[in-house]
Image (cartoon, rainbow, N blue to C red; front, side, top):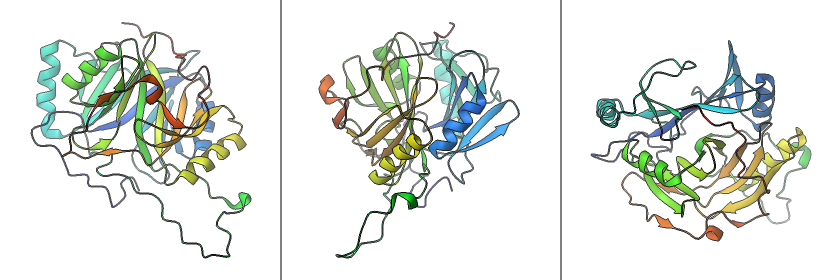
Length: 322
C-alpha cells in the first residue's frame, strides 16, 4: 500500500504553481545484480524490467526508482517530478520562457515536459498523483509493555525493516544558490533552511516533508542519497543492523538531524552514495509558511550521533556532459 490512510493527498496551496512530488529517481550503475542485492537488503522490492531494475516499497504499486546498467561508475540520469495535471501547461510556459526545454531522455518513456537544470541534469515533469506525504507520517504504535515484562525483542526475532515511502533526495551541485533560484522560480519549490552556500533544503508548496529535494555543494552534479521513511527510531537502528548483517558495514548514524529533525542511519551503497533510513522528519503543510533560516555549519547537520565519515560528502560521479 503506497499511501497510508492518514495521508491527505488532495490538499494543495491555492494559486501556487509547482511540482508536488519526487515521482522517480533514475540512475545508472555498473552492475544491476549488485544494485538488486543492495536494495533488497535495504528492505525494498526490486523488479527486473528488461534491461533495468525498478524499485518499490514492500507491497507498493508506485515505482520510486529505475536503475540502469551503464559505465564504470554510478551516474544520475534524470529526476522525474510529479505535478497536478491542471498546472502542466503553466509549467510548460515557464520552461519555454526561460529557453531550458530539452529532448526526452533516451532511457525514459518520453512523456511530459523535459528541461535541464543549470547543472545540465535532465528533469521530467509529468501529470501524476501526489505521492509525497500530505501530512506528517505517523510512528508505528507498539503494544504497551507492562511493568515486570521485557520490552525489547530477542535479536533473532526482530522483524525485517521495510521502508514505507520515499521521503526526499539530496543532490550534489556546483552552485547551491543557483539551484535554489532555479528550483524556486521554475519548479515552484520553497526554501526550508540552508547553511550559506554549502547545503540547502526545499519543500513542496502543496505540502511535503521538510525537504523534498536538498542540495549539497560539490564540484559537479550527482546523487548523494535517497531517504526512506520508516516507522520508529527502533526501525532506524534495526535497519542499520539489517544492512551490517548483509555485509554493508559502512555508513553514518544512528543520529538525529537538526534541519528536518529526523532520526537517521545512512548506509553506503556499492558506488559511494547512500540510502537513508529516516524517522520522524518535520512536515510543512500546504497552508503553513515555514520560517526558513540560514544556519551556522555546526547547526546544519546533526544534533547527536557519531561524526560523519570523512568521505560522506565526496561526489564519486563523473561530470555531466553539457
